[in-house]
Amino acid sequence: MSQSVIQVAERRTPATDVAIQAALILGATLFVAICAHIYVPLPGTPVPLTMQNLAVLLVGLSLGSRRGFLAMALYLAEGASGLPVFSPTGQPGIAHLIGPTGGYLIAYPFVAASVGFVFERGKKTFACAFTASLLGELLLFAGGISWLYVFTHSLARAISFGLYWFIFAEIMKVMLAAGAIRSWQNLFGKTSGNT
Image 1 (cartoon, helix red, strand yellow):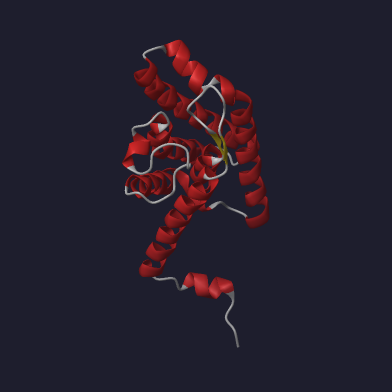
Image 2 (cartoon, helix red, strand yellow; image 1 turned 180 degrees about the horizontal axis):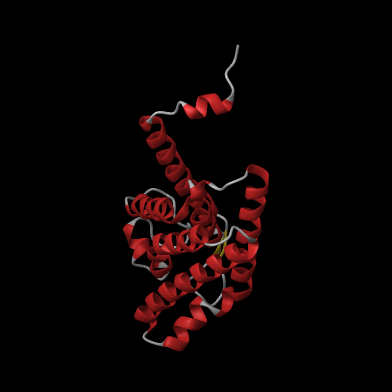
């Protein structure tokens, strides 16, 4: 006779837990890599519009602060080593991290951690997920625009390249991330970010 899922889950060993956590973190990097390849190059800016930011928000909301940070740090290590996980625009490998989009990329672990931190400690509502995602986006764009400022030596150009083109899309991503995590919670109960 087959055992119930609850009985199997109750007998998980520490090694099984570590394997599950590692699989979640690795799966998150794969998810972000896939979303990085969904992009639209924009005229007048070296920064493409990608679905990567949405994926980072979802990683933070679903995995929480610690695992979200680890997943995005691993993602950066994968990209720096030459794996094709970054958006195809720009140089491959570590050169991508020091290119025009490097500030956004380097901010990813901190964005996922901050989003997860806020969401872990708040009520699991759409408003809390929206607020956490919005704060993550502010951190993301602070990193991205700061890096662009280093390239352009002009705050006005850095903002022009790295913000104006993206405001509407990023608001939509924040709303989508908040809605997606709430739908996930409604379907499957407590998020994995709270375990």
